[in-house]
Amino acid sequence: MTRRRIIPVVLLKQLLPVLFIGFLFLPQTGCSTPQTEPPPTFTTAPTADPNGSSATEATPPPTATAAALGLLGAPAGLSVETGNTVIRLTWQPVQGAVGYVVFRDDGERPLNAMAFPETTYLDIGLTNGRTYRYTIAAVNANGEISERSQPISAAPRP
Image 1 (cartoon, one colour):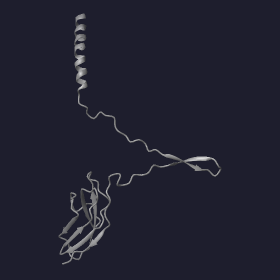
Image 2: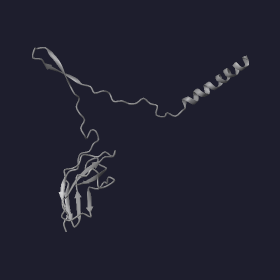
Image 3: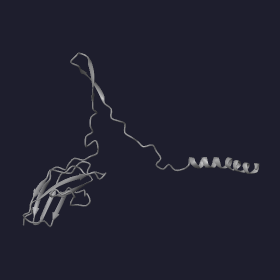
């Protein structure tokens, strides 16, 4: 009986350092503590009380601007040129944009499936005399779409 107890203890003493060293060299895989943002802080500013005592009033922290959050502004300067069954759109580039998407007739889906870097778009195969309405949105490196530009309307002509 003592022999059976000695063998596991001896094996445990020999294997324990090996297991411990092996554990130290295991790759780290997503077991980190999640990073959380600190709660918003409010500063207090003294205010005058009608009764003569001083009080404090909480003021909210300043809000981040769209630019500070990495969001893009809407494209500006949208203009059109019309032709026979064709409308050519042109606009000013947006700082930080990696591409643009074009919307027609207040549609929810852009005409182009993927954002493109050019600041012109040629819409072809249209019906002459029919009025089309367009808006443009910029796309940032994260694939986030800006607000749409001011709409512009045009009708192709022969």
